[in-house]
Structures are given as C-alpha cells and as structure tokens.
Image (cartoon, rainbow, N blue to C red; front, side):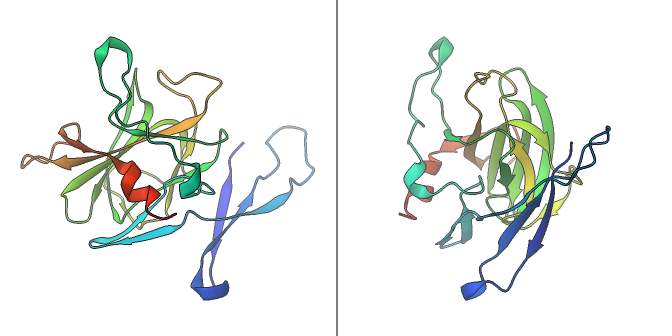
Length: 191
C-alpha cells in the first residue's frame, strides 16, 4: 500500500500543511481510508538557511541527544536517533541534492543528501521505504518527503526511528566520508 501526500499552502502565517491519504490497497478492499492532517516539522533559521527536523510531527522537545553514546564494537553513535511510528514521513532537512540511495547491513535503506553548497552530507537511515520519485541526482527543497521511518538494517524491529547524521564533507566530496557534527544542538535550539 502506498502513501500519497498532497502539499497545500495558505495556512496561517504561510505555514505548509501535509495532507496524508492512504488509498485502498490493490486487493478486494475498496473502502476509503481516513484522511488526516499531519503537522510539518518546524523550521530553524540558521546563518546558511533553514534546517528542518527531518521527521514530520516531531518537535524539538521530543529529541534526545544520543550522538556520543557508544555502540557495539566500541564505536561512537555519531548521529541522532529520532523515534517515530513506522511509516512517518521523513523529509529533507535542507535544500540539496540526493547524492546516493544505498542499502547497508547497518543503516538498512538510506539516503545521502548533499546541501546546496556541497559542504555537508545529511544521512537518513533505517528507512522503511523511499518516497515515490526519489532518485540519485534529484534536487530537493527542505521539507520534501524523501522516505518513511522504519527499522531496516540493524535497528531493533520494535523501535522504529530515523538515524540522522550530518557530516562536513572532505575536499573529495565523497558521500561516505566526512567529519561528524552533532545535529542535536542545531535541532534542539528550536525549543
């Protein structure tokens, strides 16, 4: 079953709402599914533009800093886990370009997005699925739905979340190589 999102504007103060519609599945079921309004992620204005909390409906108060937590094999987490129900829309945190769609044992279904200046890479992991139309080389605006929260890779099956990381790119601009920075202070500043 696919989830379709229709974007509309004109809400109070120019906010954008997301209308979520789940059409009937292809099988014998033909009854319409309920429609509900989903609140988009808030915007943080930074010196270089806007940084969105990349999971629709999650507020800054719900975030927990787990960047420095240790993980198996003595490695540091180096990212922010944003807990949300399976299937919650994941949105591009910044304007940029989808650089790589990749499946790995650890991250599962992932997206690597370069910002418009190609200075940082934004990593979205454990996705349940990609949004329709997402492909490598696609230019996206902050707020574009790129996938859906899931538990692919090494995520516990009972703890759907987005593993979100930001890295400063090296001069070689390799999607898999950069210096990690903690996204928590940037997103938590929205409190």
